Amino acid sequence: MREMSLRRTVLRRTVPRRTVPRHTWKGIRQGAHRVDAVTPVERDRAVDALRAFAILGVVLGHWLVTALVADDGALHTASPLQHMPWLAPISWAFQTLAVFFLVGGHVATRGYTSARARGTTYAQWLTARLSRLFKPVAAVLALWTVTATALLLTGAEFETVRTLVKLALSPMWFLLVFAALTAATPLLLRLTPLWPLAVVLHVDLLRFGLGGPSWLGWVNVAAGWLVPYTLGAAWTRGELDSRRAGWLLLAGGAATTAVLVAWADYPASMVGVPGAGVSNLNPPTLAAVTFGLAQCGLALLLRDRLRKAMTRPLAWSAVALVNLSAMTIFLWHQTALMATTATGLLAGRLSGLHTVPDDLAWVAARLAWLPVFTLALAICWAAFRSYEQGPRRRPDRPSRVVRVHHRLRSRPAEATRDA
Image 1: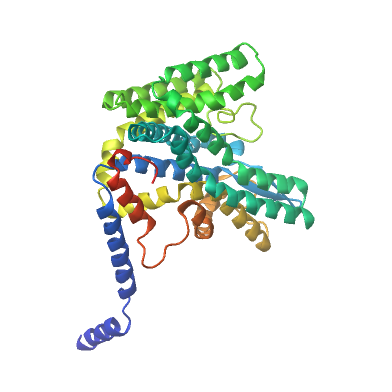
Image 2: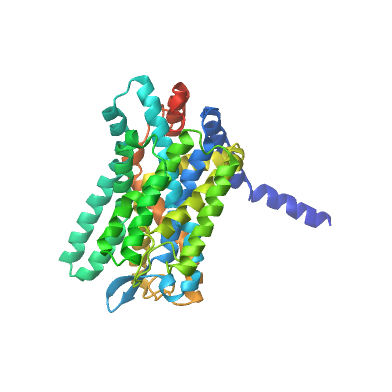
C-alpha cells in the first residue's frame, strides 16, 4: 500500500496531467469574466443570443443537407432530403433565417430611431450599418475569382467549377435582401407584418392556385422576408412584449404550416431539395413564411430564458464572439465545406463526403465530418476575420470586444445595435 501511495505521489509530481488544462480553463474563465464585466447592464443579451443561434443554425443546416458527390472526376450537388424525404424535420430545426430577419428588423429599427434622436443623418446611419455587412464580401469574391480562374486554367470541368462557385456565393443572396430591407427601414417603422403576409398569400394563390407564371414567386423574396423583419419592428414598438403574442405566433404559424403541407401540397422540407418541383425557400412560399412566424414566436418566448442563460460569463462570451464574427462565419462556412471535400479527394471517395447521400450510413458519416468542417471554418475565420473585425490589435490596446462594449456603454441608446 505504501509503495502504491508513493507511486501515485511520484506520478502526480512528474506528470502534471491537469496543470495545462487547469491553466487553460482559468484563462478562458478570466477572459469570459472580463467580457461580461464590460458589457452594459442595459444590453439585451437575448438579442445577441438569438442572432448567434440563427447564424449557427444556417451553418449546421447547410453542412448536414449539402453533399458534393464525386462522379467521373466531376462534383455535383445532392441532398439527403432528396433520397430520404422523411428527414425533412432536420430542415425545421436548422432553417433559421426568419429568426435572423426578426432580430435584424428589431436592431435596425431601434438603432435608426436612436440615431435620428441624436441627429445622425440617414446616410450616415445606413453607411455604418452596411459597411459591416459588405466588407467581408470583398475577400470572398477575390478568393473565389482567383480559385475559379485557376481551376478552369488547370483543366477542371466547367460544371464542377460552376457548382463550387454557386455554393460559395449562395450566401450573398441573403445579404442583398437584408441590405435592401435595412435601407428601407425608415419606411418600415410602422408597417404591420400583415401587409407583406397578404402579398405572399396572393402571390402563391396566383401561381399555384390559378396557374399564374412562376416568375411571380420572386416577389416573395422581398415580401416573404419582410414579414419577420417587420415583426422585429413591432418588437421595437413594444407590441410583442407579452407571452401571449409569442404563443399566438408559434401556435398559429405551426398550425397553418401543417395545413399547407398536409392539404395544399407544399413541400415538407423548409429548404430547397435538388430535383424537387417546388422549393419552399427559393423563392419563399407561404409555407416557409408561416413556418418562420412559428420560429419567431418560439424565439420571443425564449427571450427570458436566454437573458438568464446569458448572465453566465462563459455562455455570454461565446455568444459575443459569434456576433463579432457573424458575417465571417456565414460567408465562409460553405468554403470550409468545399475545402474539406476537395482535400478529402486526395484519399479517394470518402463516405459522408463524396458519396451519394442515400442512406443512414451517409448521415452517420456526415456527422463525423462536422468537427473537420468546424476546423476548416476556424482556419478561414483566422485568415479573414480582419475584414469584419478590423486588423489585429496591438498588445497595448484592448480587444475589440472590450472596445465595442465600452462604446455601447457610452451610448446606451444603441445598446442593441450589431456588436
